[in-house]
Image (tube, rainbow, N blue to C red; front, side, top):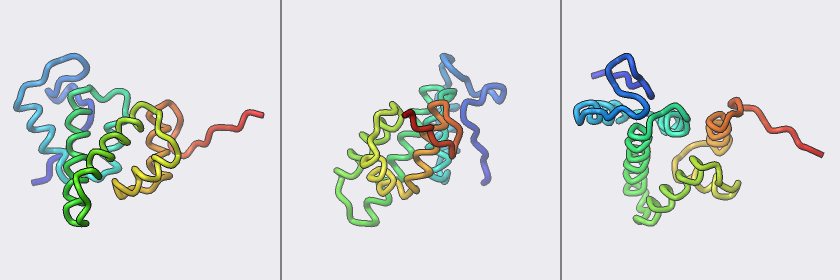
Length: 134
């Protein structure tokens, strides 16, 4: 079953912003997240236009994917706690370069890609570097 999920969709019947979605809409959205790449999930999570209920579902899917990876690699539950803490810091724009590298390792994503997605979500274009002020 090929189901396309778009973040912050409105015209398709999925409520946006402050609208309260039905349980069926939430379940459908969550189901559509399964199988999405970490990169796609991260873009949705960091998009300022994504409604909070969708961000909550995306965060949970990222944590679920991480738990599966942790189980396969033999990592303990503390890896999931650390992943959640670092994802929140990334969302808030308070993540340090070392924490970004750690998050990249926990999510299996390239640190440069994470930085680019975070920068784009904070108003910088993906791949743009901030100019040094001297």
